[in-house]
Amino acid sequence: MKKLLLICMFVLAALPVLTQSAFAAGDGPSKDMLKGIVTQVNGAERTVVFVKDGTKEVRTLALGEKMKIEDMKMNTKVLINLDKHAGENVMKDFSVMFMDMTVSKLLALLAIGAIGGLLSGFIGSGGAFVMTPAMMSLGVPGAVAVASNMCHKFPKAMVGAYKRWKYGQADIKLGLVMSVTAIIGVQIGIKIQKFILSQFGGAGSNLYISAVFMVVLVFVGGYVFYDAWKMAKGGGEETVSKLAIAMQKINLPPMIHFKTANITISAWITIPIGVLTGMLAATIAVGGFVGVPGMIYVLGASAVVASATELIIAFVMGAWGSVQWGLSGLIDIRLSLLLLATSLIGVQLGALGTTYVKDYIIKVVMATTMLIVAVSRGVMVPGYLADVGMIAPIDAGTIAVLERISYWSLLLALGSAGLIIVVAMVKGMTADRRAQKTLAGVRHG
Amino acid sequence: MEVTRFDKNMMAVAFAEAGEHDTAREILKDGKKSKVTVPVPVKNKPYLKTVFFGAISITAYILLFKNEQLVTDTFTMGGWRWVFPVGAAFFFSFIHGAFASNLLSSLGLEAKK
Image (cartoon, rainbow over all chains, first blue to last red):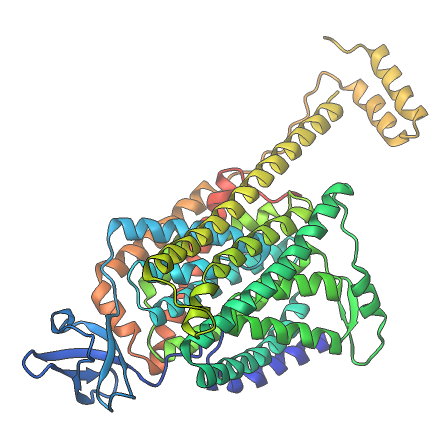
């Protein structure tokens, strides 16, 4: 208990560091981004009068070369990106902050929320990789989509973590230790991102993100899939990996005992796993794709405990990410709450589903999702390679087709994972009810 | 088919021979009151709680969307106003989370014991 208190105090001590910087899926809004209202449009001069949110500072901004004057909208909150290379007050792009909510958009958000929640409750992470692009395709500006997704992620993770803790699956201590180290990883991840952006520009950054996505997802996802297949053949019994057994033998103080996970391991082993989770979270927005396999194969936790503990990490990181985005005022609460409306049901359904299935099903779902997401990023690589000039330019039509394949494969990843979970859960529940009935039959003679 | 006392005794013997002494004793004990039906504990489903939390949740959603303009403007002012979106997310996660939990229980979807 004392140790737990110490860990909590450490987390609290780390908070000031956190408030200095935003993380996971973005470094907060860029300094070149302005938020406010356009009060006047001057067609002849191609300028607008802009009132900045909060400070009420009035600025006259000129339209960028490619911008059209008729796209300017007055008296509604807008986001403006400045093109500092063209001048101090020249706009690069302009987007309305709050999209008009139509019935079809509302239904789309509810559907994505439900499947994302189900996946989250079951494998500990998921959904984020598809929610942000899905919201953007509904017309939400990128920064608002990331912020609103973050604000829906932490309450969902909190409810999921609570449920799975009640089922005796979540290791709070391991979750907190991982969260603290992941926060450090996020800082490193952001630094690397910034370095690449400054050295190689936007295209280089895209290429880097895709490459990380591909390498991590193909290797880790492939290994998880191989392991799940081996388990399925061996009757579904989970064994602790050889690597984890070797790691647990390293007696390098401070040694920490994690009760629920039932492991005693040196803090020096947990640190790199947490740091890598954070780095990945800052790069591809889904830290769980390294965190969960790391806890399973390196620390030696079971798939059930690892996926449950990941929800605690997602809660801590999501809550502070939301504070950061809230400080910048970019959360569209309507989007967050619509996603929550169904994801809070999905996450609890996914959580109770884990009590009916064998451990390897969790690994199958995780591996399937990771491998399909890898395909989704993989098809984008040729475009990015052409952008940085490493291969010959590709025509716009092909790029558009690749983008569509990428987007739909993300939805396929969600859909197929949802389907596996539902089928496994229904099978588990039916078998359980049949067993209960047989038992009752024996009892009552 | 009526299970006779003889059948029961034989069943108990079979269990006792297999080493399941407790089950055998239970079968013999049951034999004395075989006509009495043992009430199966039925867990009350939380219909009332589902309706209660559901009503608060839906009211909150309606209130928010009726005042869409005001809410989005206030919640995105930045600075200390981060407490609005984060607080709202916490509020909905408790109320709507409780509704979702009770809804699943009402539908008979419970975790395996």
